[in-house]
Length: 304
Image: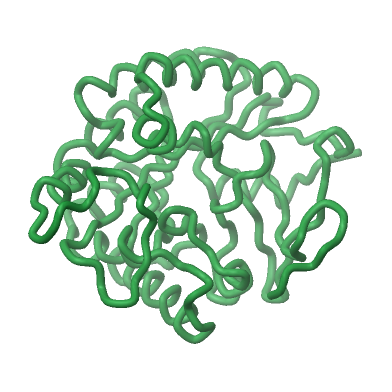
């Protein structure tokens, strides 16, 4: 899909819409803010497959040659320890996680699949592994196979095909939304440009964006930008306070993207706990999964 120079954007994936011109979005029970927390369970392979691509800022220690046990085991900390600490913290505040799980985790960590399902988490697609991003270097056939392989692995592991998707490192090609919709995905988290859900263009049925707050992604803030964890907590609470105030006039969405290998460390988790307590003690906060938010938005669109 080539770039199209026109006002507002260079592509036809959605209609440009300034938030000040929209109708009023009302969340359940008049909530001001819909709070969604995405928790990533992603496998880092010891060696990247030939032809695969990942960013140099994918998180974790930089590669130092094979076998790099420090790097891979650092990431696996999230699967062995961090995930349980993060889910416990979310449950403490009445937040049901939306777990972005890649195919290699679903296939090789059945205990984690069962644990997340028993905790009532929603599991959404997250590609094959963190080592294999979707990019424009893929052919359409390769990308379609990649998407279906990921979804088939999750369906086999969980008993249900996912309806949401977050690409590894937010990776997409110019045709990804349409291929995801074709495969049965109803919402995508890779587009990070709004404070409300919105509709994406697709000939294959309803497709929505559930925007993540990219600068509050723990990897972006803590690992890439080296924000101190205390300042990160303050960023979470300050962002929430602004959304809460704005949400009095028009409902807002706060989608956080967290990684258990990072935020699940024992010296960081307390700061997340503090931030979530600040959010959930307020009236008018709807903590929900991605599919719950998208379902509500689809059936209760903004009213002029």
